[in-house]
Length: 164
Image (cartoon, rainbow, N blue to C red; front, side, top):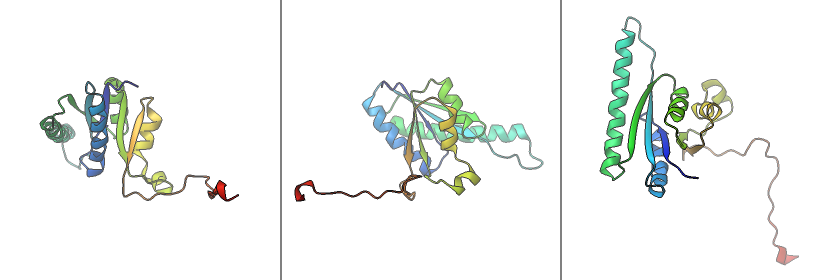
């Protein structure tokens, strides 16, 4: 699979930035690949605040953050980097630029939570997975608990065939 554009959604957290390490490994294997860093800018507008002014502030803040990340990557020798900020909820602001940028791959992180917590809080990763045909490489939070897969009821038994 030729990887031409790798989209990495970032929100400023260490967890989201963990996806960069994996994306950089892929870029090193595909030196002509373009790394597309994207950030969603959305927040509820406080009562009495000017909506347009608040949106502009959030977009500027997101641009500053992404430009800083891109500058660090360029200093490390990764020159094929593009940044883009989309205003809106997280999942659509990953799916839409993946389509418009013709991303070959989305590399993103996940908390690894599931079950009731996901039903109540929602899952950006799951929403992105359901909303795009672009392949997704999910980098799981190393601190996330590991649970058996749903429906797992068997216990594996290993036998030494030479003992028989």
